[in-house]
Image (cartoon, rainbow, N blue to C red):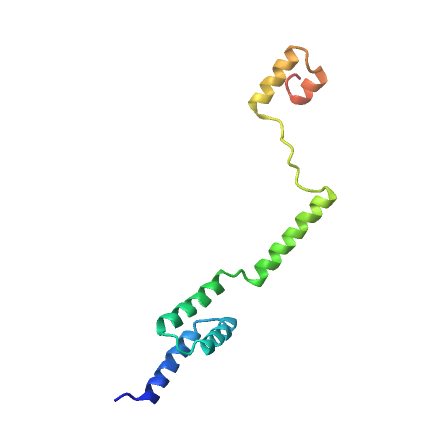
Length: 121
């Protein structure tokens, strides 16, 4: 014979243990889901619990969202004021120096410019 009361207690204990693996919000969502799915089998119950648990771990936390929003606003402000990072290409490197030496030798740049570049002393 089946002990219906004992089976119900056991099921309730298993469900409570599963619910304890969820956060507060997910526990409420699980209870809401469970009330609408009274005839769900264990596979459906486990899948729902896993979905809620995995979804909670994928959500960024409040501090991370706040930090990202602040960084975004900071970047927008820098763009609006023209104080963004200097993205202009910088001179230098042996190719540029060799080109400058060649230009100086051919008279394409002045002596003062060559001194500034370190070609002549």
